[in-house]
Amino acid sequence: MQDDRLTPRKRPRQRRSRQTVDAILDAAARVFSQRGYAGGTTNHIAAAAGVSVGSLYDYFPNKDAILVALVERQLATMVDRVQDHLRSARESAGSLEGLLRRFVVAMLSVHETQPDLYHAVSAEAPHPPELHACVLQMEESLAHALEVLLLESDEVALADSDTAAHLVVQTSEALTHRFVHQGIHDVTRERFIDEAVRLLHAYLTAPPLTEASVT
Amino acid sequence: MQDDRLTPRKRPRQRRSRQTVDAILDAAARVFSQRGYAGGTTNHIAAAAGVSVGSLYDYFPNKDAILVALVERQLATMVDRVQDHLRSARESAGSLEGLLRRFVVAMLSVHETQPDLYHAVSAEAPHPPELHACVLQMEESLAHALEVLLLESDEVALADSDTAAHLVVQTSEALTHRFVHQGIHDVTRERFIDEAVRLLHAYLTAPPLTEASVT
DNA sequence: AGATAATCCGAGTAAATACTCGGATTCGCA
DNA sequence: TGCGAATCCGAGTATTTACTCGGATTATCT
Image (cartoon, rainbow over all chains, first blue to last red):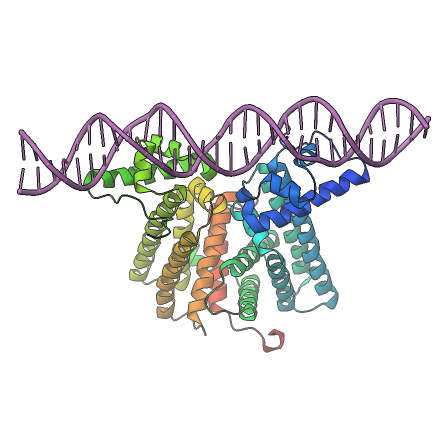
């Protein structure tokens, strides 16, 4: 047949088995959060899902496949949440600063919801190409959604709005992630948000580099 | 005695054994780069170091201890390299933009030197508290070194230079890391540097947020 | 040289864990 | 109601791998 690193041997056809698959993914999220990726065994996951290991391996060919499916589900809902925030920002037609604030807060709250799971997945689990692609796609979606709003704003006039949007997404992703997981000194949540917004706002409204220093 | 999660059973006293320890760390760097953390077994490391497993466990109580020692060595040299760059920037007494450019380039080249090792350590290996502390200290060192230079510049007037320095360090760390490991579309290295510098420069010279929008 | 300490060795062990398989159970449908 | 397909089960296996230990080898010092 094929490599089958991700395709299950059985596909869930009835409602019963679809619920099983969902239960397994829910359980995986809990187990990985509590015990990390390496420490979260497939037996743990099956037990937490109230299912036997056999059933688990009916629908997932291996442990990595569970991870990938979990991440896909997780990122999809994350993108939805952030896009919702952005949509409401668009309707209220606020300033650029307001828009960025909503974006940062949305990203921050995403990380705050399940910090341990996020840590297990991003800092401990293997990164098969499927996962990587999944992350790229999420970033692409967010960047695109953001770019649309940036183009509508009259406060920004960027040469390359696409790249700028990507940088904004990457920066807020990284900064909020780090803030949640290690913090900065005595900086409070509110102050962090202000600072991040200031950074992004400054970037988007800044003039190009001075000619002299460009390489 | 004590927990002994990191203390070895024997301490290297003669030159011979000190060379062994170095060889083991060198080998660990190579092995982790090529095979990842999970895939890089202690037997692999010992073999690559031209040493028996027994000797390895004479000086490292467990696999994690090797990782921690390796990271300590790696981060220390990294801080040195970046600080060297900064020192030369100080002597040439350039503009803020020039300073930031040197900083970004230094961070970027650090990541470019051993991308696989960096990936294995940061995205696959366990993160015992000792590692975490080590990273915090590195960030602290860099932020401090940078802050000194920022305070000397007449282009910046920040309310809280400490926090700003930390944000700059975290941002450049995250952006350069991501650029090396996943890139951005068609953005070239040179263009990425320009953009990162523009972002940091804008942040450091930006006025405070407008009163209205502050939470 | 002799004694003691340090270093090195590597076959072997114990434990962990991803994954299998053949059969029992339950569902969908005629 | 009965039959085939889908689902579920869980004790067992095969493999991997971190780590041990008792002894051989080499250095240091007097």
